[in-house]
Length: 219
View 1 (cartoon, rainbow, N blue to C red):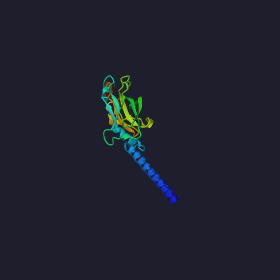
View 2: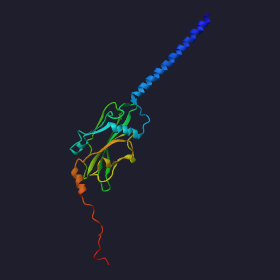
View 3: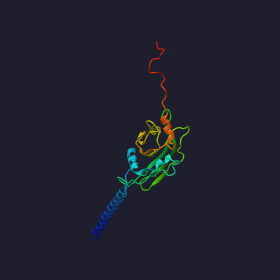
View 4: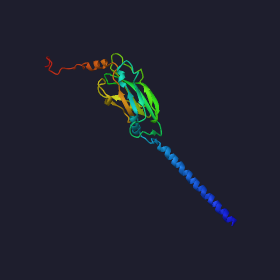
């Protein structure tokens, strides 16, 4: 009889331990699920998806101030998204904010690197990057404009760098092309000396090398 009671107690204890283990495992899963539900899973995002998120988070404050004597009030702001899924990202994104100058040349706009600033963003706080004062006005009466872009991931490689199609003086944001889908946003800044760009546009083209009519000495 005593052996039977001992076996019963042992079985009850074993069953109780198993129930407690299952409950603990269940609670752990619920806790993990709750933590995962508090943030937005971005572990498998492509460059295009990262750019789409960044597009809702990046803003360019007062870029038109570049037309004045300095960019003192202009900045790029990466803030928590205000539309769509506004949860914090589970894995912060590497974000690059990069500045260039574009100078009008006979062969087309010439791109020059100015500054690149790297930061981490997950939508939990606001990050602000001021425009560099070294965005040049151009030399030798050339038409020069600034360009700024915010993009996800590593710094741009050679084939991903921006280019401007058409006349630099008249170009807008839509005329800037990048060789990558990682761009969250960009701005082509106004010339700080618009007279130089206007002068470049008003220059007459080269005179034709030959006459369209017959030469008087033509046989």
